[in-house]
Length: 165
Image (cartoon, rainbow, N blue to C red; front, side, top):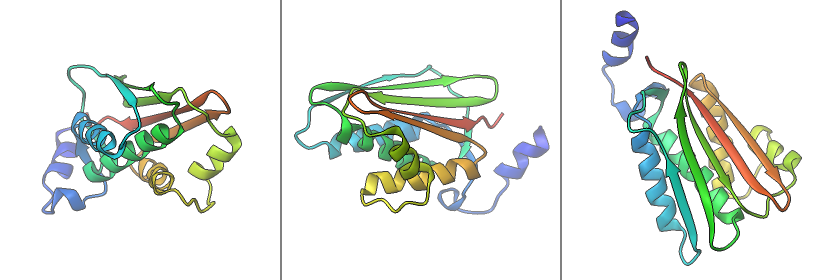
């Protein structure tokens, strides 16, 4: 285990340039949440974040993780009903740190969301473009993402990131 840690920690490069590095996930989550709140403008949305006091590091790129989480939050905000809540829950298991995001919103057909996020369909929304790219980033980090949408129900995203140790 020590040699595995040294492999990542002894790299002579700018951390922001690395594609896969041990990252403390609460920092990117906090920055993404703050940036999403600023981007809301006049829209009234409440964010409810539930996270443990301590979370293990995960394999990711800190900047890309922040951008992905912000993209998910903004997609949920654009879909959300006025004066509704966006629920964010961070959990940890033996191997994974998971982020669950959901809203009460208008939703779109699930098949369409699956194509937008996991397919090759070009999307016009910058937020959806970020989430589409993020699905590929997560895969390159060894994690996975799930997305669900129901018309009249809203959307749900889950991001699973592999723990560093």
